[in-house]
Length: 138
Image 1: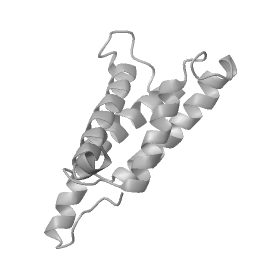
Image 2: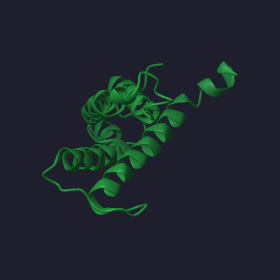
Image 3: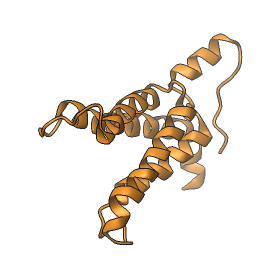
Image 4: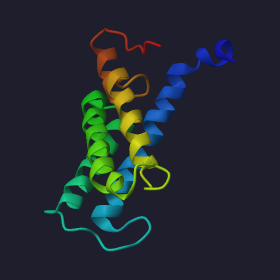
């Protein structure tokens, strides 16, 4: 399987980056605007409001591949803080304290921070114009 999928690694990573970025941005829109899923928007000048702004902005940047390493690093940190502040006090097990999504996002974004934007990204197209090649090391 490694030999079959290895040649598609840059494309699969790009899809992962785009989908994860969009999903993260949707968490931000839900907090800030109550969409999707309804609910009341949070106060922007609150901790949840700041979290919503980070999720929306970082999610968009990750999805389009602009400053991905920085955006993903900040998003990873936010998810670590969210886990320790909101989930860990409810018990040690992520399956019981409902923190598995925060942990997955935390480590997914940490990986993206180390990998960068990759192909199909604004950063990649900017590097292409400058004459350097965008590659992902696996």
